[in-house]
Amino acid sequence: MREVEMYLNSHHMVKSAILYVGPDYQSCCLKDFINTTNLDEIIITGDITQKQGLDILSPLIEQDSINKQRLPSKLQFISLEEIIPTEKEVDALVFENVEDISVLFQLEKFSPKYLVGEMKQQGLSSFALWEKYRNTCEEILIVTKRIDMDAQVLSWKKNTDNNIELSVIFPMYNVAKYLDQCIESVTAWKADYIEFLFVNDGSPDNSKEIVLEWAKKDRRIKLLDKPNGGCASARQWGLDRAKGRYVGFIDPDDYIDESMFRKLLRAAMIGSYEISYCGYNELYENTGETKKVDDLLGWPYNLGIVEPNKIWPMIAFSRVAIWRGIYKTDFLNRSKIHFYTDLRRFDDLPFKVETLANAKSIIAVNEHLYYYRLARPGQDVSADDDRLYVHFPIFNYLNESVASTKDQRIIDYLQLCKIQTHRYAINKIRKEFLKEYVLNAKKDLMTTGNFFRTLFMAKKELGKKARMYYFGMVTNNIMLLNFLKHND
Image 1 (cartoon, rainbow, N blue to C red):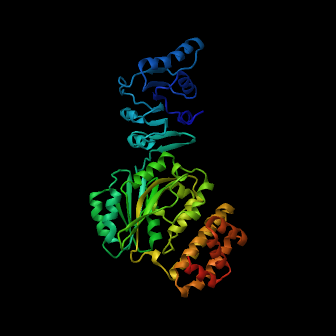
Image 2 (cartoon, one colour):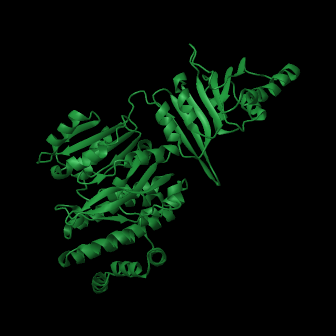
Image 3 (cartoon, rainbow, N blue to C red):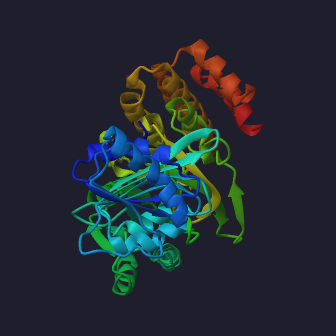
């Protein structure tokens, strides 16, 4: 039984439906549909002529008179031009074999409680139908058939508490200089089902006043005040108060392409993916130049991944850039993923690893839509001292949440992530902090990985130089590490 029929059978309250069919629809298809559902009334319409409609119905009516086949009490064909809303609302709009789903837009006037159907992949997506029907329907299920690939399923149920589909969280501290550009870029998309949560983390500048001025013009903007606690604390504060089915994060000194969140949400919803992400650009404040960052946007991620073992490599090979994606809130709650509020910096690293270690589905939008500002005073990425020791409590958390799964494949990628993180720190940190950093890095790496297995994995997956870095760290060979550092 197909997903559409299974869905209708699981919703016993659906008794009447408009069945919109395409020109290739056959009588045998209708027979199967009737036999596998429990509808009392079916009105057939669609991209077919009166004669085609009668040709679909006639064999079933004849069989009913001969074999007493069960038919709905009301079964008729009405051409699309003649069909009009009645006093009795139809329970469901069901569609099959539709070549162009834009024709379904005009049936929204029937106010169906359910929208259910199958469509071929085409220019207009199931997201376009969802946008049209989301205020009318209680539930929507749309299966998008793809050639030589698994179907994508948009499955949605109206939230009775609010209409927010996406919450975007902005941790805010001393960013007044950049706020206007950031807010202008995110609010350009005028959807009413998005909220913008600006978390004022005790900022001493006038960031709060800027947000309040914007909030007067856009009711989607909300200001959340809290005492200063750091970026992780601000992000978690917003996450605890977010209403959306999906949640995203923006550093308010950055900005986005105005289409970014619509494209991310569309990609996520079409296949009910847990994570949807896009590419990003590095924006150099001192020169004003931008550079596209190549980071896992192509095949197979742009087609959607529903196999965790193909997602796990991203733990090691995708950059720490959580702000270029959106995340299903149910997925975060189910996986108990949160921000570690005692971390004063680099809190996005554990969030990245934990989401990728737990996600069962992910999709990439193959466009560079986020602008990440670099060379700004006070950024964590400029740290070159004992602030880099924060990596050790971060990996302690990940040892508990990720390595404790005992899945060796995940642990391998976590180990590779550690090697690359510690390599980054060794290349950044000043000489007087290097020795202590390496001692802690050795302890960290030996906590979760077998020496010879990690040595093999480092060479295979990261290259010979990464293997040498790993060897230098676990043998505490400062001379080797300094050599690698100055020749990296």
